[in-house]
Structures are given as structure tokens and as C-alpha cells.
Figure (cartoon, rainbow, N blue to C red):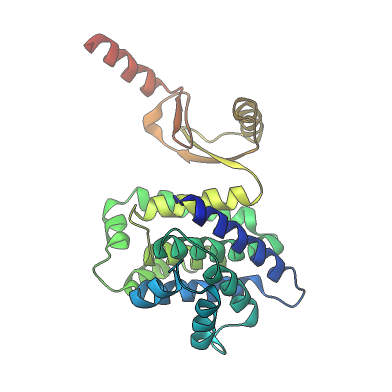
Length: 273
């Protein structure tokens, strides 16, 4: 997700307010996250409303009153408290307000997973779902098709993984297929993997290997990558026979190709030049 400077500041304010709201003992993070996602869906459908609440030139208090007049009694007070900060802040565009609100909603769901001791599970399940979709081009096209109703794509997700993953994982994946932000479902789910890792100040290393890595090999690889990048890493390994021996590792936009297949391809390029 790319945000301009004003929107980055607004997102920071919104996340701080979310932390304050979720710090109250009686607040249910999962419920707040799902309520905020319902508002994302509303603003996605209602373009005029999105423009009104995202108009940084209008009176912030008037924007807050508008949202409360529409949602009072329909979402909880903790969710309204977060929305006050979101719509009361200055965003670079209504679209970036929507992206920011979605990010805050997702964070609330990740907080709920963390409090339940399931954040590692959710992160791993998101990675696995992304790889399943990536391996089936027809499935990815069906889940990315914005022409049909979002309810159909949500139903498809539930039929595929609904009984196999944590409830938080399911809600997050359903949101991605409802609003993939224009870069595809696999990209959107991988964004969630990275947000889950970032919640604990980690970066994600996507590893392709022809064989399963042992616990010791994973530990050694994590330690080496942490030395290279200077930060903790969340390691996610995908089995891929095409790489042969060695590993292919992606961190952000950087790829480390230590596979036999990669070395053969490099040799071919050298010979062709």
C-alpha cells in the first residue's frame, strides 16, 4: 500500500487511537476489526459518502458528525472512536482514507489473534492460502474478478478454506477478495502476511526449496538473513521442485537465487550475451 505524507500521518494517528481503544479491558478486538471492515465495504459502495468523509478541505467536526449520524447504534462505541480519528484526520485522498481504514481494521483482527495466542497460526495460514491460490491460475482469476458480486467470491473462499483455517484468517482473506486493491488476490494476501509479521517488528522472507527444511536449517537461515538485513525475519517456506538444489529467497523486492535452476539460467544469459 502506497500512501502520501499526509495519509501516512493520518494512519499513524488512527493506529494510535486503535491501540488506545483496544487497551480497554472490555473491548473485543475482533468485533472492532469486523465493524471497521463493514465500514470499508460501505465506503467502497457509496462513492459520494467516501468523498464527503475524505474531503480534507471540509470541517473535521462536520465529517465526524456525519459518520456518527449514519453509524450510531450500528457499530460499537470503540469502533466509532476509531472512526472519529480516521475521518477527523486529513488524508491525501478519499481512496487513501479507505486504504488506511482497511489497514487499521486488519490490525484490530491481528491484535485479536495475538491475544488468543494464534498470530503465528494466522500468519502461516495466510501464507498457505496465498500459495494455494498462486498455484491455480483459474482460481486466482475467479477470486480477482470484480465484475461479479463480492458475496460470490466470499462464498468461494469459505467453500475452499472455511473449515480449515482460523476465523481471523477467513475474515482477512474474504476482505482481500472483496477489495483486492487492484493488484490481485495473491498480492493482497501476501500483504497481510507482511502486516502480521510487521505487527511484531519482523520482515518476511519467502523461501522456495525443493525439500523440507529441518528446524535447525530454518534457525540457521533466519539467523543469516537477520545478519544480512539487520532485522528479525519471519521465514515462510514453499516447496518447489523446480529450484533443484539450493534455495530461492525473496525479501521485499530483492531475490537471492542460490538454486541450481537459477545458476543454470544465469549461465544461459552469459552465453547468450
